[in-house]
Image (cartoon, rainbow, N blue to C red):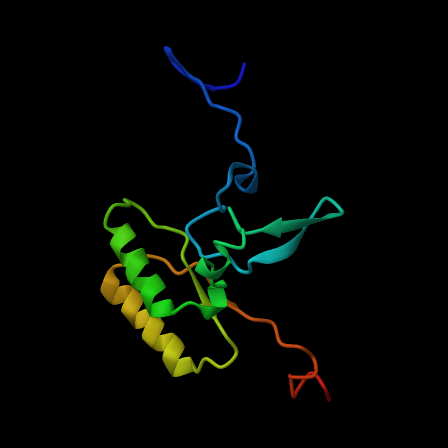
Length: 134
């Protein structure tokens, strides 16, 4: 039997399928790419955005292309209804300046976001990186 036992109670827990198998993403973060490869236990699995088709292709932006101020404001609105913290990430490009990142942190604080989990930047190609090409 699956479930959670407490003194005097038995709370059933349904089996939880992976998010992509039920037509949704794993969380509130925007998708990183419309299509990507994921490695799990030595196997490489192709993944696509939920419900991706020719009709919905243009609705999806990659996380790095989204306006991060919009994401921060949306997180601030959600935070009002969350007692603790939410796992919120900044998705920045390599063109971001530190002053712009500081502005995002300040906006997040003003909007009431309690935690910034990661700052995720786009990887550089070795040819684009001056210090990597040396």
